[in-house]
Length: 57
Image (tube, rainbow, N blue to C red; front, side, top):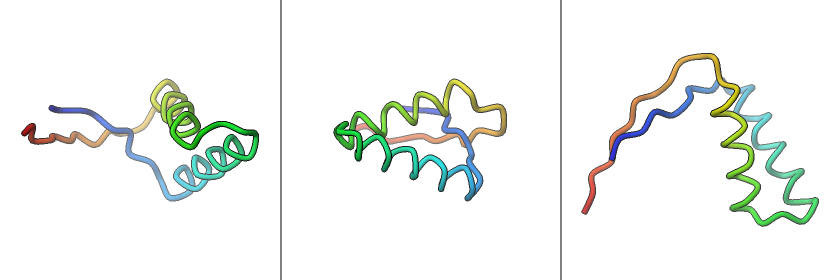
């Protein structure tokens, strides 16, 4: 499986973590909070991407 992942700065990573924590504090599950923030990042990201590949079993 191959996927492209947005390359984030440390500042962007910290902001994402803060958003996830805030969503969890509002009652969302951790998985749903992570999904919402990740989807938002993918939609709005204008920078570089990291090309990743995963071996399937």
